[in-house]
Length: 534
Image (cartoon, rainbow, N blue to C red):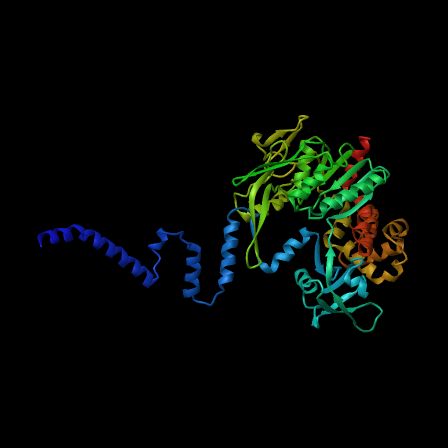
């Protein structure tokens, strides 16, 4: 008995310990408490908070909505360009970069609370069934869309859809007493990143690039070949208003301008090793004169090109300081059709500068930066005072360039409203030239159909005295009196803009830009600089 008692006493602590552990585990299993298990696996605090809210919040709430809010807030705390894309917005966010979308193939504008067809896409579904520029869309699939305060995004949702699906539209057409019905079968509609390419004169070409999409590389190569075939010896590449897009597309465009092995850009991040993009031997425009136009809305991929040209002393940058986005995003798809665009690296120009502007003071201050520039007078004159010596870099030829906040142009073009042209400035601020041109086109579309194409219109259409007098009366009715300062000096500028806006309503950008650019100071300076260097 003694030996048995001693043996039991010896092992009793072990048995008690095992029993205690088993009891704890059983208790955890039965009660569902996770205090202890959190030590054994990763603790999901966000999921716990969502579950508490679902179970105990005072009102009924959507779990999916809570999750999206949590993700959005989390990403906003990282940087301004890491974003969550809900499933319902996925195609709207990605289609512009893919180079096509599925829909009915119209360009539209909401005018006087009505969807006005500006143009139909050549060869697209709407053109095939007989929709015309000037038609007003009144009903879509039996539901009224006119006079209800509809927004652009709502129109897009109604008209876009899967290839092969049908949409029924009813339209009002001038001269027809009843609504016209059209059944349109949606199809793939191409989108383009080049708004226009044309020859300014016998030596200078112009390309307006609005975004960097999946099709940009081929579009740009084709445009260069077309213009070189017409004798182009100098190029104006207009990146104003271009907010960016695919990094690789920007690299492909820059490659055309730089000699073999010249650095275009390099990227680097904590979990992304340094990657250097260098020019190949396949450039189509490596030696000729080059000017790149930028402004405060030129961002990301646009800044990569401007930085590569500037840092390699390859051409002139003209305009105003660019936006300042030097972060690279990758898109990660989620199982419910939504996606996350996450910043994974920073990009650097060839001299080593990162041109990302600061976002340390929060998202709101970051997005208000352009307004601050306007209020501080930077749109009227360049300001490099905020760039410390540590942000100064030198190009191979010794030119000083800056990092830390966009690309500072070589030649600055201020945004200045000439106080001597008070009459003209009032017209612009109220949008009266644009509106009159729209109404004139709408009322005179039949007469304007005599012009075969944009070139024919540019050559033959004249803003005559009758049109000008009608416009002056229109402006007076809308609160701009011809007694204002600068009335006589404004007339020629008004004629040019009226002709340009009417051309846009008829022929889109291919009609607009060759006329409008005659009033554009940055463009005119670019032409002057190229001519100097011939």
